Length: 169
Ligand SMILES: CC(C)C[C@H](CC(=O)NO)C(=O)N[C@H]1Cc2cn(c3ccccc23)CCCCCCNC1=O
Ligand SMILES: [Ca+2]
Ligand SMILES: [Zn+2]
Ligand SMILES: [Zn+2]
Image (cartoon, rainbow, N blue to C red):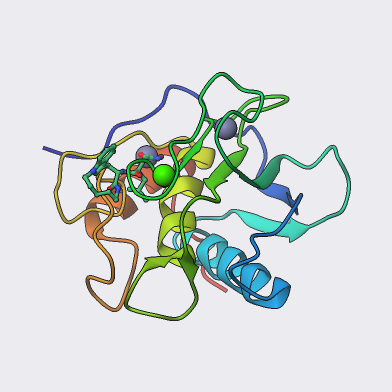
């Protein structure tokens, strides 16, 4: 019972990300904050660093979309699937898509918290599959706020299997 590795990982430690568009549910700075905190949750446990860019060559591209959005995995409106993401690789690899049929919330324990969904999706963007540890962030079901840290022990073991531990400061 544990994490799954996707079979691909980034061959570099310093990754770039680009927020391509925004959900109308939140202010742009709230989306930027949620994404930055979700990335920080992973970089806290690995040697990885993430920098925002406006370049279309960004490693991780973040998009909000409804229904069919050009990748063969159409979203289903409110409820159901909340988001999906692609394992590390060129092009669409690493990208994360969020279903804008959801009502995303910010720093809230109710509704579909964007930070929590993003932390899960970015786990895939870094090379983690789903965990069968129910309490893990990488479990396939949205669990809302669970404990103070969004990244659970099983998730830490998985991501450190891929990228090692964070070097001491
Ligand atoms: C982990 C999450 C951030 C991303 C995952 C998808 C995923 O793994 N992306 O990488 C997700 O959206 N899981 C569904 C799984 C799911 C639960 N139900 C469904 C009903 C229909 C379709 C899917 C589901 C029952 C009803 C609840 C629906 C709302 C919550 N949805 C979920 O928990
Ligand atoms: Ca949905
Ligand atoms: Zn998509
Ligand atoms: Zn998932």
